[in-house]
Image 1 (tube, helix red, strand yellow):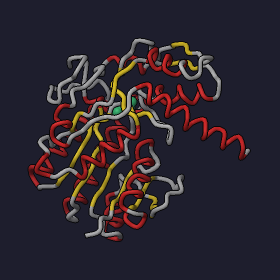
Image 2: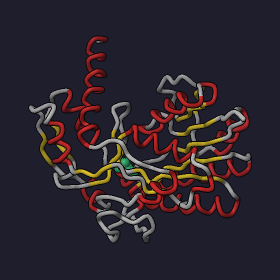
Image 3: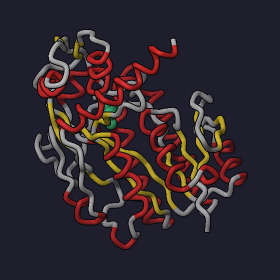
Length: 319
Ligand code: SER
């Protein structure tokens, strides 16, 4: 049967790149990208959708005979701390809508993104275990812990095949992050390419788990295509790429752009970062569906700088 895949949050940092990857893999006719506004020109169907609107989701699911949903819409960690109750409402209501519509319309598979933000200060800082009491410090993290438990519940209670990854901070040239604590690792490249100094909102020794966009997208699709019988984690899989701190990132940029300058001025996001582990144990993902990252810091910097240079040269030529 032909897959029909609906994506919520398709304007987002991950959603936009995922939509294009799914178009490439399944064809334009199989993908229905949705978001609050029609901002990006995708080579597939696009529908305006507010995922807090249950009927809106159900109408699209029926209109396109949807078989899978990737629910990427969410408010991230830093923005979430400014409006905790709104963040809880949006993150949970959209998830409930997706889960319920999926259950009642025989959707085959649902993808729900979780995050390293599920962890809190009491988790071991390095190699944070897959299963550990999760006591997050942010409302975003609380909503992701709850989401993971609901994913597990829908699988056990209704047999709905919900699959999930705990993403580290995602770095990519294709899109900009919005409102996260790991956003510095993308902003820094844009400044470096434009020969501007960067003022980092985390201190230089803040090590966090990160992943390159190519790896993050590949992990997502590999998990979604893995045989059901291989999956032993029904909450959310830890997926690690690499770990580094702002100083190490700046050094890897300076190897290519020696003039680049960085200074540090930690803000409220430092506390959020301090509550997260430095690295996570992803041995379950490696064992169950052969997960393996391909990008180290050297490769990431080379690829980011090459692609952003093309992007900004193109923009300068156009203007
Ligand atoms: N990148 C996310 C954030 O910083 C973590 O999931 O909020």
